[in-house]
Length: 253
Ligand code: ZN
Ligand code: MN
Image 1 (tube, rainbow, N blue to C red):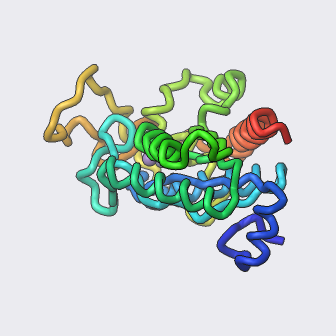
Image 2 (image 1 turned 135 degrees about the vertical axis):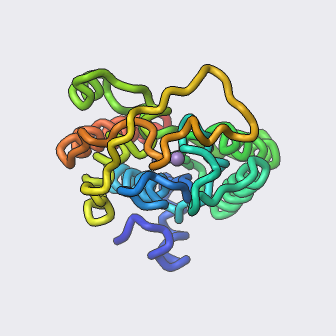
Image 3 (image 1 turned 90 degrees about the vertical axis):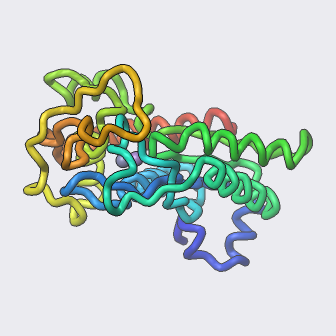
């Protein structure tokens, strides 16, 4: 039987919920990822990772929230790219709040929000906290929130970045996301279109309106040149194993 909620009938879904299933809700974005990766990269990766973890722990994956909070120049390239389609923070929080309340109404008591878009984190946290406040202290619902890249092991990052790890913020459309896409969705990666831009060099402050000249014109914040499916496999192993272990620990599976 599928791990994807939207491929089940409500009757089969209700039965799984009754058995105490863990539900994974991927939270992505529709955002430029350079000329070589698709606009849906953040949601595609969060969904693929959620599906692998769900297979290991007997969970279900809900349809992804495929729009995210506004792309920021230093971690997503910014809002000036065609195709980047973003929500106001309050809209994203409201979306998460409504979704969490609905899963609770179904009877779900263990929910994991898997974030694939850096900018989402505090607005998703806000939505979870508002939903739990709405539901009250006896709701019995526990929610885990995570960013998938935080499960990459130190040794893996050392091996994947022999010239030094540039940090997760600059990793937008770079080696980690490109390698993970080569692992999960190779047919959606155009390796020959990886740009030669130098890494972005941002000052330690932000400016509004965005100084678009700070952002590489390709939208890639550090080089994706060293990407490979093998690196993607290693990163995916760390991430899937790490999330599965955290879910088993916190939900006593
Ligand atoms: Zn991304
Ligand atoms: Mn993103």
